[in-house]
Length: 284
Image (cartoon, rainbow, N blue to C red; front, side, top):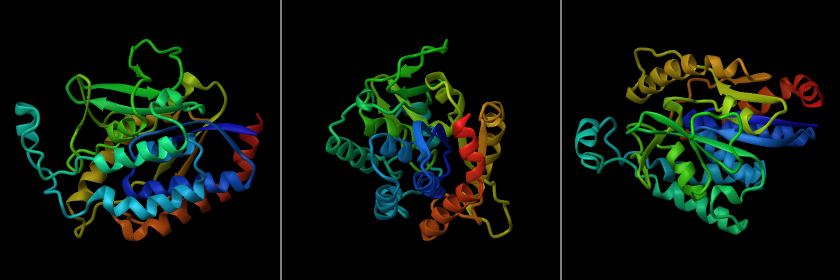
């Protein structure tokens, strides 16, 4: 029984993806191909390299606060200066180097360096802010893709960092002549991209969009805005999914590390509730 799985972006809520993978593992569902955007790329890369869901869960909990570096960034700062002067104006934002370093070290333990070294089919989207164009980091040959936007020779940590460079939290990620930001800006769920390299059934894991209320903070509003844009952009892509698992979030904010365990359980429970359907799809 095998499927492909596409993991949406969603900040801290992304630990729910690990709960889904754990439930699939317990029920003998083989993941044959995987893709992820933003936090989904963090999980997808680790899983594709051979790390088990429980180990990913431990890593996520251990490093989430350090990676986000809460409190160090004046949110929404210097965007205009960056556009005009390339690097000016982002000194307060998290540069994402810890995330990149962590993934490169974990890749090295498995004998990998660049994304092309990984055996499991993998796709990770990011957006070049200068070109306003999506690029796909992948270990698979291009197929049915007229856009000339596949990149295979990039360090695994750099690919994950690029896809996870959430606007106003992380600095854009430089790679060669590119300036990458979070893949969720143009594509929060890489279903179509996964289908370019994998010709079997693909399920999608995304998140409920929480309401904005009077006590919502700035990041809640940013997250809601991106949810609205992301859901609209993803409509076409989601229609190509063979199944969609929508995980509840209980108003978990983008950086709300206190709800990690709750989000993990939401993902696990959602997969278990839908396991009969998942098994049916995996056999078809």
